[in-house]
Amino acid sequence: MKVAVIGSGIWGACTAYFLNKEGCDVELYDMWGPGNSRSGSGGASRIIRLAYGNDEIYTELTNNSFNFWQELTDESERELYNECGMLWMVSQNDSNYIKNSKKHIESRGHSLVQIEKTEAKQKYPEINFDDINEIYFEKKAGALMASRCCKNVVRKYQSEGGKFYLGKVKVLEDKLNSKESFTFNDKVINADKFVIACGPWNRVLFPKMLGSKTYISRQEVYYFSVPNSNANNYNLSNIPCWLDLNENNPSYYGIPFHLNKGFKIAYDERSTIFDPDKDDRIPLTHLVERTKKYFYDRFPRLHGLPIAETRVCQYENSLDGNYIINYHEDNDNVLILSGSSGHGFKLGPGLGELVKDIITSDIKIPNFFNISRLKNIKTESQYYNSQIKYNKKRLFN
Image (tube, rainbow, N blue to C red; front, top):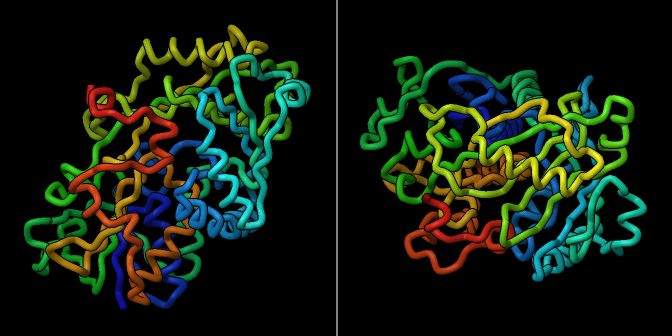
């Protein structure tokens, strides 16, 4: 079977890798290359964790990804995965998200334990816990070096015989059953199956299918300086990745000092629509000031230290925050992977293996990912509800 995978972000790269490993004739295409600065898989790092409330399917896909990430790290000369753990700081009144996560994490042999505030203050004196209600530590969690990971997956795929092409792919959604529906540098792509994993450009290629079911939001990432005299106090060996679970304000999260870039902090909020081809990737002043205030309050020993680096990226969101894995209604040989919604990188290997099984073994796509659910949204995932106060007025202002 010949399969063309369009998009070499982490979903496309992992899908291509597992299909090639299965014995398929695979061609992987991308405009800019794996882990590029425009990509949803670009940037220095991502958090990997198992906690997903009652959305157990994500816990399973992430759990299925750990071995691949560790194997990839062991084969690399540079660090790709650091299992530093994850600190959950619950400043909202409802901690059901964590409590529901705990049972699914423990059922897979891992742990999510509550830490008393006095103990947390002693262990992590750099963090201000005064407004935090509950604190939990997830051991099987950590940081992935995102761009490095993405590039290494493609290298691994190529080293095992996979073909990779760099250039422009055009799609004619209104002619998906014609031979000319997919072209690369104006030449027809011939394949038995097509897998589309183009992140924020999915809805550009398939406006009929995804235009009203997905949207792109602007996200800003900041790297704060740490003291030159004691930078090691703020690295992954001494402070784990962390997330402030807060339903009233943006849920800030971060990865301590890594890759000599700084102390990373970002927010999980989908409040500003973004065009990845037209909008400037320059931080907005009011968001910078809001982030500084939060960061200096949460890490008072770093008060006044400057931002060393920034990055403006994007989330490709579905309307309910869950993934979309669906064949196109006009051609059941075209499989769309969409709606990563800001939480797709970590489980790329697990998802790639799932897509491989869908393509080669005709297993049923989980209903949880079927696009038909978005025709009449009555519920959203617990993940989405817990981290973002979801309402259209806030999302589309």
